Length: 507
Ligand SMILES: Nc1ncnc2c1ncn2[C@@H]1O[C@H](COP(=O)(O)OP(=O)(O)OP(=O)(O)O)[C@@H](O)[C@H]1O
Ligand SMILES: [Mg+2]
Image 1 (cartoon, rainbow, N blue to C red):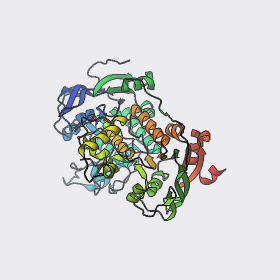
Image 2 (cartoon, helix red, strand yellow):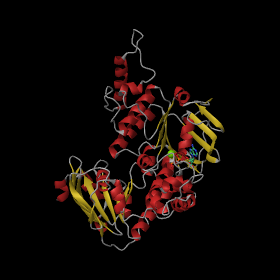
Image 3 (tube, rainbow, N blue to C red):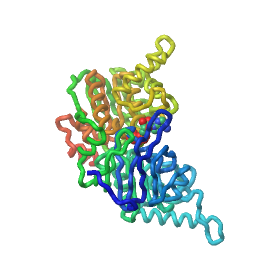
């Protein structure tokens, strides 16, 4: 049920905004209206144009056309500063604080409060910062430097800054992607508090549980166009998904039974002081083993040690019977290990290189068999995987930095799939990936297992773990607290092992 509303009711409205980059139409009809006192979700597949719309609201991009109003007044921002000045604050997934400055300095940068003498008063600045955090109910020390703060704390600081700027509209583009469950709850608490005080909030997420838990209305976009707006409590997930993808979806977890072969990866007594200890498990050819547990349990750290990025103090990693000697990713890759990292944007891509070059970075040796990399072969290899993963790009020759967030991730996955490793480690393979492509990624992982590749999958999404894994290992505080075969793995058992101490789990 799309609904109409009287004009003047909204604190921010954008109607029919368009934005092209050369031949690429990033946004054809960007339309959103945000009321005071509501949390409004913006959903759509990877590349639908959500972040482009956000950047127009933020004054980063100037739209080619469209009607843009804040509090009823027509606006046209030439810069992010102009957008901020009329009360629009945008919080990105990765906040951009100055690491050397203190928390308070980051909040008040460029507009430090003055004391009676007319000079900048650090004391006044600290007092105001402390007051802001008290209002938000979050204990952050205003005097500490920003360096080393968690992403979650950095986001809260950005929000504190928005409040101090008297933001009427707060926009959050995939803020929860890098947060743990507790941190998500805290962020939602802060967002609800601001809504109840009359702010309008725009919230972007690929997680429907969050969208339905937090928001009052949902706007759907597809292919750069506005599709509809719904009241959250009168619409179903199925309806939203249908509008987002505009087609029928395949099964979300198309697990195929693959014959299980010989042991490929064997990890024995792996330990790193203060991080993880006594990690022992194996993964066989054709098997998908999930490493489950809460964020911070040490799963990514174990994966990084196996792949040779981080050192370990004790234990061995064996691949197809050969113990890995060198603690380096080069040695791991040479032995046949591939890894799709958790933080794909930072660790997995060379932003200025083209899609084709990124997708084939790991393949260079193979493609260059005769000493030369032919652009044609490179493009053919890249195109094959890009097609399977439905990477949305104007051309394989475009720089990866111009792709949408989700599409950048698909390029990293393509890159590793193309190497056809013996063991593939995938860390949170579908985080930030839209529902349509999610089932594609699951199908691909299943297919790879079917071709005899051993898969070690780290995932915080229980349905994904339960749907995909032949065996589930659960970690808690650096230890493996449970090992469950597919037939015995349930959400309750996994959650118990992920939260209980070793003693309790053993009982
Ligand atoms: N600077 C740019 N140059 C060329 N194309 C761009 C640029 N910025 C965005 N695009 C293209 O515009 C389209 C929309 O991208 P956008 O980042 O808005 O998607 P999104 O909905 O935020 O997706 P995601 O869920 O993956 O973050 C994509 O096809 C993207 O490649
Ligand atoms: Mg985006």
